[in-house]
Amino acid sequence: MIETALVNTYSMCGELEMARRSFRDMNIKSLVSWTSIIAAHVRHGLGRDAIMLFSEMQMSSVIPNDVTYTTVISALRLSGLCIDCNLVYYCIVGIYESIHLQMGNALITAYSKCGSLDDAISIFCRIALRDIVSWTSIMAAYVRYGFFQCTLQHNEQMWLEGFLPDRITFISMIDACAGNAALMEGKKLHMQIESFNLNLDVVLGTALIDMYGKCGKQQIAERVFDQMPVRNSLTWNSIVTAHAQNGDIKQAFAYFTRMENNGVQPDIATFSSILSACAHAGLVEEGFKCALAMQQTYGIHPTVEHYNCLIGLLGRLGLVKDGKCLMGNIPVQPTASSWAALLGACKEHVDLQEGELVAEHAFETCPERQSLSIVLSELRLAAVSSIGMSV
DNA sequence: CTAGGGTTAG
Image (cartoon, rainbow, N blue to C red):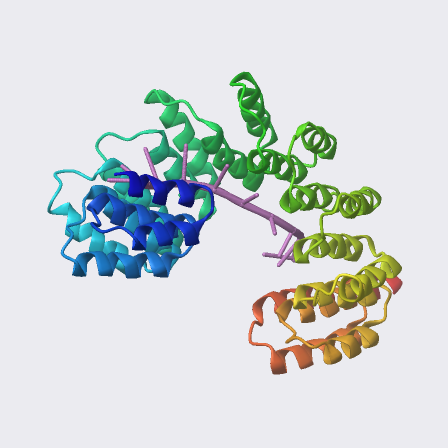
């Protein structure tokens, strides 16, 4: 039907309103046109609206098919309604003999994003004839839960079963290498990407930069950055972070400046990386200047993590009292990390007296005692052994 | 008409 084609064309071009209009004007709404308008809303991230349309469709006595269900699963996932994914699943499991491929693939992602990894795995195991999307989905699920080794093992199994990774598959595998700081494996994948002639799109390129950064290879990260035809704010953040997390604050700032000159606005993540690098390197002036610019120039409100970097910086200078004062005046709720920043400074300067005071206050207000207790006992130990040395 | 991808650091 020509009207359905119109709905789809508008939807593909990002013209949701036009797609809706075309749908509304249709005299006879077929299953395919209903599915198209639901899919259009999913494509635009409007899960709730998609679900409402699905109900409307059922009220007009149109019977959904497997394609509709697949689309509805994506809509439910977008809305975080995983329990309802279960309902869809049990609805259809009686209709189809084994799990429908696309529906199963959608369920793997839905469960891994708003349900449990176990449910995702169970769907993966029950798809009789998997394809590359099934493998990609389950590997992305493992990465989401931090099981990086499992991701790489599934990669091997995938090859054994005769599937070759594509551009999207590589992203999860690169992420797994980043999580494990597995440089050799990461380099191998990078070489495969090149030999497969896959172009470095924004996401894949950014994943590579992130991976090399976490493996301490900033130069290679830069090379990837230079090769990328298209970059976005996440790409810029990755290259800034690559330098920041390896202590090269000079280069981090250099890219920060380049980022601005290229018309990309720094955001919360950019400042997190830079501030934590400053805290790490003890760069007080740079850190505070940065935090000031963050608010005044960019209008970004610092989070507690940003403030913790500043508290830590004061502490490193031995200005624990000033750190405490700052902590008492920040417009956000201090966390265990805030206290840890202060206590860590006391430990660094082996200031037992101040440390005991800080710990006392911390324990009064902060429920997470464990990590703080460890730092405190380390401080006490350091204090005792320093007395021993001087005697 | 349908399925898979991303940022801080602690």
